[in-house]
Length: 215
Image (cartoon, rainbow, N blue to C red; front, side):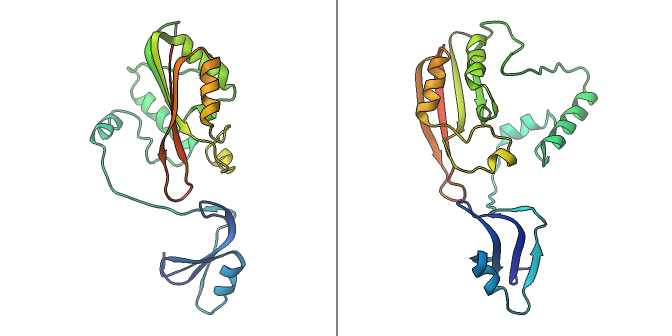
């Protein structure tokens, strides 16, 4: 895309803190939002980009490698390039069809297909926010743990980014530390610890919370 003066309109523009309906960029730098963006873009030579109802947000990139994860990904379905849930499902189905010798386990966290006291540990990363009946789901995780087994949950602290419901199918907009502690306690866990372990300094400013408990 050209780095010349460009006006984006016709969609939702998220700044990391609020929505806008217009964005003016010149020489790779955001110059203005909303009415001010349209005013600055009134000069001749400004490229007009119609988002056609789409969603525009800041993007930050870096370059690093996780050799262990890379090795694990190489033996499973190639889902990293996927851009939607449908693409992920199609990639997993294709992989399963090509590897009929592999055993696949699927289930619902509200009714796990495992016997009582099966696992020493259970982890769930950024998944509890998609569970409608969270207390019931946590009771299921408690059920499949052996005595003394540990549950570890990573998810987002409470936030106000409502578009997460549409973008990520989130049912919960994060959780407070007190809320997670109460859910775990009601589900039978003890020695519960909940703390914020990460804070984004830019963009959405999401905070990640870690909750652990013992059966």
